[in-house]
Length: 380
Image (cartoon, rainbow, N blue to C red):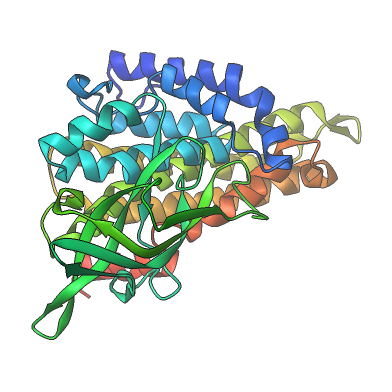
């Protein structure tokens, strides 16, 4: 099953799958149970070239295409959502804006380290700004030639780990025609006045890092501006289009892993003298899972190919993220049903998958917002 992939993409899938089975699977349950962000595992992913997958080789990346990156996230999510989340957020939300909008100096300063052994956050969400990205209240004021930043961010993946170098943040930097003007800044974690705190006790992705960021009279120079002043909203929203592909990949990988667990269990579990997969009620559930996974993969891969062809892909990215996250929810629910009580025990990976899938309908655009986005694309 190569789904129209070229030889390089097929080999890369096999490489990432082997890594996930060898390095991620043995520690996934322990890390989830103990809410452990695994620095050692993340460094291994850096050594394996999974940080900076699409970054040009001159900056230390692998210079692969979008579809290859999405395949990597899919294969990691097939084993563990937390690990996949770390890689997805690092490549799309962390590295992406710097790669696409950074100056030569900014790229040279950050990308080599982010491709090797550091992470970077994407600071958009606030208490007043989630789906409404223009609800940002954090501010930056020019004072004596420096930008003074105040405010906070929440739910920022990869922002508060020992490996985190910094974050890209959106703040209100002024006003234009009576409307707030937004600017994106690159801010390093050791900047005076900037603090980061991990947000724990999560239901899902318990081994990934989620941070709360606070800015108290943080002073930044024009060298910290990403793009141009006033371009922040465009940069952040364009980045989210690509990020939706990675969340779609997480949904696809989660569904694939849950389906494989349920199928394997159904062949081993014997009731009334035969494996339960031989009962129509169970076999029909598995058939429906397999069908929806195939459809989700085709939709997601199409969106990736459009991006790689430099075609507009915003609508397709929204559709892929919406459908893949829906399929993940449906497949995990049916997989638990197939596995019965065993699907609800922490001794079985299915329990973790069932929890992890829930965030996929919320992060990087809720399902409701995505329907709004799609409706606008089709002229409603």
